[in-house]
Image 1: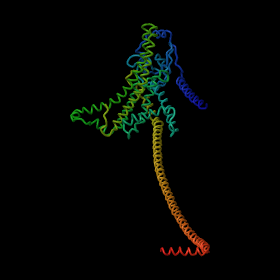
Image 2: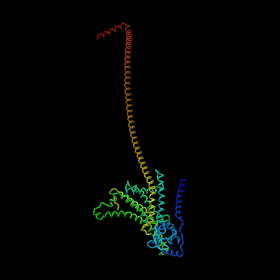
Image 3: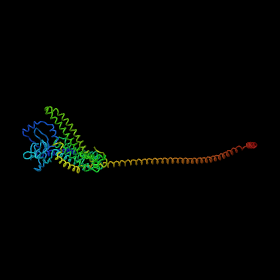
Image 4: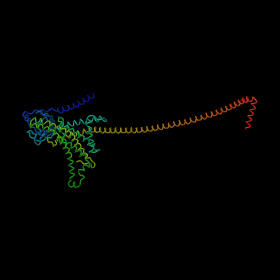
Length: 377
Length: 164
């Protein structure tokens, strides 16, 4: 009975935590930036033709606000902080709700909707002419998504660490049982065989961090409700950062053997002199490795999100061309396919996190290999 | 925002967030977790090896015990065998001694009987002689009361003498 109560109270804690977390997220300044447009505009936007391409693009791309839903003409979204620096007006920090969903100009700033700078914040002069791009360090949807995921990641992993510390010498329980096998898998199946038994420890924290970071963000991206659903790992800036970290660590841990293999590989002399053909190829390889890492994760996650959205968009395309009934008729199939692709994406989430970690480990292994280790291609 | 143009704002934040996360996790999560995992691995390995050792010890002990038991059994058998031999010997000795003793007793008894017998016979002989002398005396007395008879006797005696 006592146990049951404890369990219940534990669960209640989690639920309370979740509720507080969500409300805090929503309660930022103006809780819900609801708004009704002018009636003319309203009619216009309501009659606006459904554009599948725009719909899909908007759902997978980054944004200055976190859109939750549009009910008739009410846009419900969570405002995010806009941080701008321009030579003319210095540092400007304000909520994205000031832009009123891309329609308003605030402090001479505006989100450009067309042209070369589409989707970016531009600075206007008093007459309404574009005078330049401010330095934009806004907390966009992707950045907010990263914050959320990092918060959850730290919450889970620090809890596991605390459990591991407190229950030393005892059998692991609960969350620890979920996380520890994954850590062991990364250590024993990824880091140890690729880097080697004596050197893997130096790289293990990084490999574990990227694995959990990518996995959590991949999975969170699949949940379509507010604090989740941001397309984080499908954002090239995010994958680029991860790949650059891998690149930097690889480059800095490269030993003599690694650099010798790049600048003076074991090939016939005419491949190196007078034209340093092989060194060029090897150097290209050094650069392409992180680029491949970056693109693979980005493209996989983006594609997954896109396909799901496309299947949903199908309903509306059919609804527009053949009437509401056709749309309804198509919807079960669309939903079925969406669910299928989502499930596939769950798999892809794990695979991509694993592949990114494995390849990073392989690169570290190559950089620290002493003799002729197996070459990776 | 284009998909394939990295946004520098996102890059900026990502580097900061990821860097800090990496540091925090490395310091406060991976280190204790990995240490705990290693510790647990060592503890389990130690426990297993000590269990193995204990098992080995028990097996050794069992073997020792077996050997001791075997030895004890052998000894017991030997002791039993010896005891049986001793018993047999004692019995045999007792038998032989009893036999000789009996023999001796019988011998003595026989000798005694023999002596007694001879004595008895001698006595008997003596008495018979005495008796016969007495009878002869009486007969002679009776016979020789008459002359005729005396003559007859002398005759017969003479006859006997003649014959010889």
